[in-house]
Image (cartoon, rainbow, N blue to C red; front, side, top):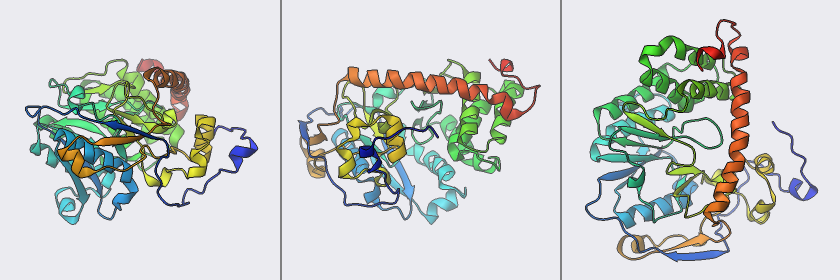
Length: 373
């Protein structure tokens, strides 16, 4: 891990990952009344969230509150499905990370399009519509995470089509094909499936990346596999029946990469609002003084409450709700673009390092990087 010299003030904020404290709200209230509404004749789009059967919804309080209000405002049907025994009969995969994609496939028939979300994803800009990211020419829309070369597995837009259902079932069934080593669960499997699905005639070339995956023993190796995937795919992000949205162009991003700050000019949804990574008030007061490496050492993906008040869900459906944002987090679009541009330089450099490890990971002189790029 990168070593960062912390000053004495920062050292005192080191946290136990299991430390608990009462949920709190932001103290800098920035109220905004939202009057914009989606037209009644709009596309049939549903929102789907899947959680474990025993999950306490309070673990995702801010995320679920915001998505629920947003869905009611714009008349998006919202389904929160628990992984019960009934679903395990339909989807026999043993791990929920894979089984959930089978569950999504069964759900697709309910709407023309479905936006699948991780439960820790919240809305910060209710004036944006999901339709902005829908491309009717494809069946599945994924997006690139920003802080590495990973295609996100926890959220996608899927059309009610045989192709989308087939892909999601194949995704779920990849559980039976993952290597016995460090594989990254469905995140790793998604990249393997994307290679096989979109490049069936180049199996000998994509095998280079798949072989690297089978040699993985930790995160660095997994990132090398994902770098191999990226090198093979290149700049082409649109395929026959799916597309991958480039960094900073999807409907969501991780909030921690900008220290929780967001802009209505650039953002729609923020990922990472789970209570286990919420920071206590004493740390929230100094987050602006920490860079990402310091924050990572104190609490990885830490965040502070995005709202100063919770939502009046009745008003969300029948009136013009007031969203009480955390005023300390709302910044200009230029500020977000500046922060992301700085981070991208680091991400690009780490990509080169990951790719340079490919031959060493394979430990076979016959597999050279030049064979795929």
